[in-house]
Image (cartoon, rainbow, N blue to C red; front, side, top):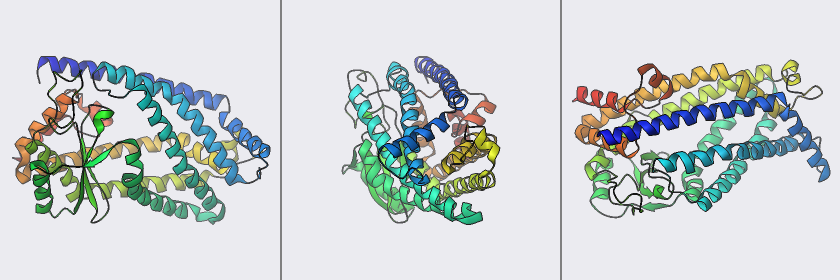
Length: 392
């Protein structure tokens, strides 16, 4: 890494860390106001008034909860827009990553809000119905519902949702496609489709990932990952971004290492265990009157409010521990995937790719080990390079 790139990476890291601190303070102020002003209580009362105004059944808890969730979603989304604007048009723009126009950003936010509501509102109604009809052990049925929905979303997201936000096109015929197919075949990876996503319309950050069920696996490459693939704009004329074919193969060998070690499945199982733990605690506290009274609900105990209170506030300490466990496991998985790629003979190419990706994404190379262990799901590049050298 040259001194020029190092200075840019350092400036980007400092700016993002400062922004992260401001974002945390902003979030705490917003949540404090929500609590102090009994906002959830007023959202619930507004929902009842809206139902009465339109002659809906205002005693139907599922209906009122859906209206309340929509109101909360609107407030939450609007409150987060200034943060998103600064992140995109100030921070990312200043460091040369943002490619979005104002109109692209507005359309993206509208689509994101609508898709979120279309998914969460029916799910919420299902959750409330299960709690109402599931008896004392409703948390088991609630967990099974979320498992089914999660699996359904794994199928739905790449086919329906993701194309709403980004353009996916088949990777053109050529050396890169041929070598990727050969790599997949050598590992008996059931490659179904191979896509390039037009991430350059959104940002100059680059990546690659795998997804899909059973024999319908897909590989997706960011167009910014492939050298000379995407058209440069006036700000990128002097930049040399993207990886060579052998480096892309090394990156995919790393991703295939995650598949070979079943990291996605293990991560899914861990997330479900955490979710079940949250639901069990929710079941224990569902009818705890002082919890509702503290939020202004003296005469009623709406299920949706109890769910918010337990999962978003009461269980913060427990979920913080869970998040740390996830980070520790994720870092271990990254080393395992690097080891897999190196054993396949892609060690040198992987090292070159990691260095290029760090340069292209302005990744800062130096972090305190304790800080990194708590905050970063991926180990620093230096640690990964050292591990690759030891593997060889």
